[in-house]
Length: 349
Image (cartoon, rainbow, N blue to C red; front, side, top):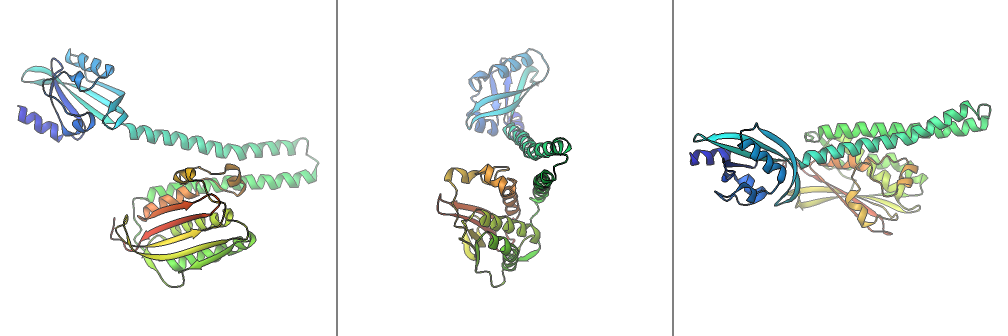
C-alpha cells in the first residue's frame, strides 16, 4: 500500500499530502515539498501548515464530514500566495484518512485584478471626452443657441473629443486582435529595410511640421525576415511618431537598422532597429512601466498630443508575437532610444 500511495502522490500534478485519521502525515508529493517544505512522515499536519481554516476543515472531514473546498492566503516557501485548498475524505486499509491538495490561484487573482483595472481605465478614458461632449451639447442647446462664434468653437472641440474616443476604440480593438494572435508566429517574409523607408516617408510631413529631421542609417538595402507587414508597420509608425512628437523641436530622430551576429536572448542572429530622439528623455523610474496599458509619463501632455496610452502596449504584444525584444534606454535631458530586436530566421519558436 505505501508504494501504491507514493505512486499516486507522484502522479498528482498539484501539491498534495495524505493524512491518517489522527491528522498525522502519511506522505506528500514533490510539488507539496516545493511549496511548503519537507513533509515529515508520522508528524501532525499542523507542523507542515499552520492555517486555522485549513486545519478546521481537515478535522471536520476526518470526523466524517463531506469534502471541503476553501480559498486561503498562506505563507509558502515562495512568499504569501492565494491558494485553493481541497480536503477530501479517504479510506486507507479500512481506516478513515484524508487528502489535502493546494492549488496556487495567485495568477487568477492577478488576471482578475488586471481585468478590473482595464475596465476602470477604459471607463475613465471614455468618460472624460463624453462628459465634455455632453456639456457642449447642453450649452449649444441653451445659452449659446444663437451664438455662431461659440458654435464654431464648441464644434471644433467636440470634433477633437470625438476623434479621441474613436482613436481609443480603434486601439482597443487593435490590442484585442494582437493579443488574440500573439501565440501564432508570423510565417510570411517581410523586407524590413523597405518597410522602414516607407514608414519614414509617411511620417516626413509630420516631422517637418514639428521642425524635426528624420535620418535613416542602414535602411538602403534589402533585409528579409519573418514578419507580419501590417503589424510591423504599426510598431515602427508608433515608435517613430512618438519620437517626433516628444523629440525636441529642431532636433533629429534617427532610425538605425543593424545586424546582430548573435543576440543572446534570441540565441541567434537578429536585426535591431533603433529609434533615437533628442527630446527631454524619461526618468528611470518610468521605464519599466512604459508598456503597461494606459500608463503615461505625462498624462496631460500625452492627451494633448492625442495619445491613448495604449500604443506601447500594442507594440510590446506585436514584438512578442514576432518572438523579438523591445529595449528602452533613456536619461532625463538626453533623449530616448527604443530598440526593436527581431530574429533573422524562424528557427526559434
